[in-house]
Every structure is written in C-alpha cells, then in structure tokens.
Image (cartoon, rainbow, N blue to C red; front, side, top):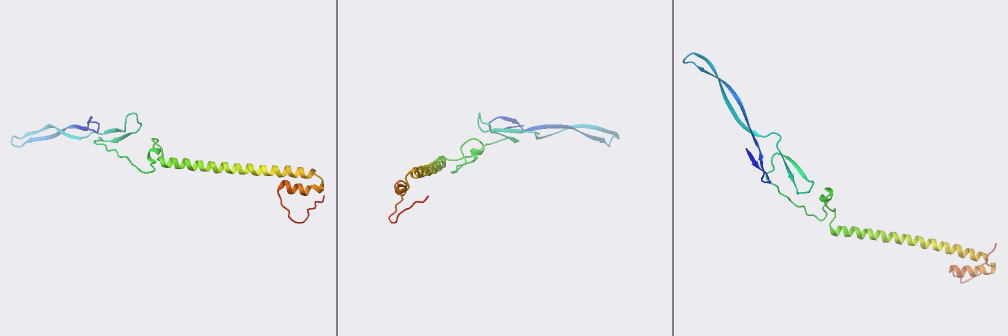
Length: 167
C-alpha cells in the first residue's frame, strides 16, 4: 500500500477500490425464484494525483515536482572548460578562472589602446596649437625676418634658394 521514496518517507501509493457486485442465484432443483447475491469486489490501483517533490538542497530554490514517487536520485556534475549551465540557472559564473582572466586582459588591452588614441589626439591638438601660435608670432615679425623665423620655429630645413614672402 505504501512505497518508500528517496528520502525514506512512506508515501501512500495504492488505494483500495471496493464495490458491490450484484449477482442472481437460481435454484433450479427447488423451483425457487432467483435470489440476489451481493458480493464485495475489491481491487487496488495507483493513487490518483500522486506527486513527489525533489529538493536539491536546503535553502535552494530548486524544487522539482514529479508525478508519482521518486525512488532514487542520482546527481551528476557536468565539468567542462566553459560551463554556462550554472550561469543560466543563476547559480554561478559563466567562465572558469582562466577565461575570466583572459577577458580581463582583453579589457585592459582595449583600455590601453583607447588611452593611447586619446593621447595621440591630445598631441595632435597641441601640435596644431603650437603651429597656430608660431604662425601668429611669425606674422608679427618684419618681412625680412619671417622666413628665417619660420625655418627656426617650425623646423623646416631649406638648403638652397631664397624664400620671399610677398603680401
């Protein structure tokens, strides 16, 4: 009538069904009218709506409801380099230690490249400001000194010929 589940609890498994079977008995030898005979008919069947719940561990929200009785439980651990099952269930990280470090290194590399690009942009802005300032200073000099000042301030080397500036 009862079955022991995986937690060694006794669960009512079978239910007893009884109904009266009516038969007629006739006695042909004595010519009596038939008589009604009531006989109990008994059988057992699985209890309807029977359910058992698997609780993974105390304090864990993972409870699995099963129709019937859970007789045995086997727990298997899936071990792979990149387990995402725990992460999908909200129980763990999606990456192992090596892959986490690899992602962190990649993020640092991108940050360093970004910092270098920002530094290059600042350098180019500074160069533009220096050229603009140099051109303003050169423009204020007398014309006969502007070519030499341009050559000195902006570092342009002229080896031959003469530069003439006409306004």
